[in-house]
Image 1 (cartoon, rainbow, N blue to C red):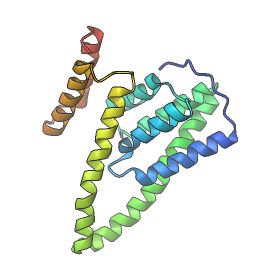
Image 2 (cartoon, helix red, strand yellow):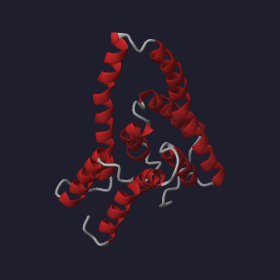
Image 3 (cartoon, rainbow, N blue to C red):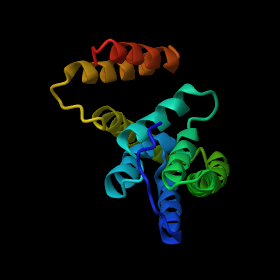
Image 4 (tube, rainbow, N blue to C red):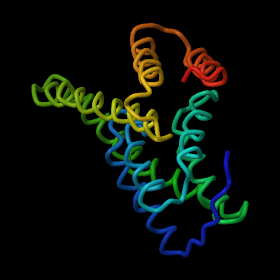
Length: 194
């Protein structure tokens, strides 16, 4: 990852980062990946604690690695700490972002899953589940938009947008592993087609 930023973060900044991830955790319907648009706005655009390349690399590495995809949050925290100048700060960034993103959602999910299972026959519970589907889809589409546009890709760069749309459809309609699409994207980028 690019480490071109040199940040000076005080305790208030770390507390703000923690509080922001606590709030994102409450919005993470469909998983933490659905909140990446807000993470990008906060980390890259508002505070400039990460470069767009670092932000995208955190997501790409976590998606390509085995294990839960929420690891991209840890990578973002790690990179913010590295940009602040030390490995100790990087471990602190991981702790702040992962605790923030996991604590509220895990607690609520545990409690709500038990309640929902006990009351799964209620019309209100079924309606809530169906009503959340469009919100999750919209959040995932915004994530795709942010990842495609964050490197300055304009709308006239149609091969990149076509590759993004095709990748989304392939992921949705097939069981093809994500690594194949990441490899294809890397290959097309390497030869200069996207």
